[in-house]
Length: 136
Image (cartoon, rainbow, N blue to C red; front, side, top):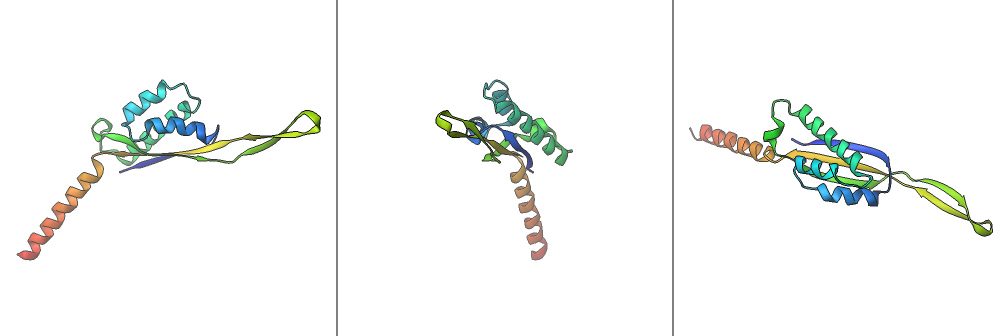
C-alpha cells in the first residue's frame, strides 16, 4: 500500500530541486534519507522532511505492518513548477529588468516492495479456492 506526501509552494526553482529528487528516485527509504542528510543542495532539507512525512503517512495507513520488514522505497518523486512572483529591478538608462522568484511543488510516493506481490498471491489463492469449490 502506498502513501503520498506533498510540499507546495516551496521557494526555489524546480530545476534545482529536480537535481536532488533524481538522486533518491527508486531508492530504499533508509538509503534515501542518508543521501539527503549529507547533500549540500538547498532543496535537500525540505525534501528530507517531506520523505519523513511520507513515511509517517505510510505507517498511519499500515499500523499492523513493521516498517523495518516492509521494504519501503521511494516509488515516485515529482518536482513541478509552482507560482512565480514577478518583480522589476531598475537597470541602467531607465530600463527595468524582470526578476522571477520561482517556487515548486514536490510530491513523494512511497510503497512497500512486498505489497503488490502479497496481495496478488492472496488473490490467486482465493481464485483457486473458488475454482475448486465450483468443480466439486
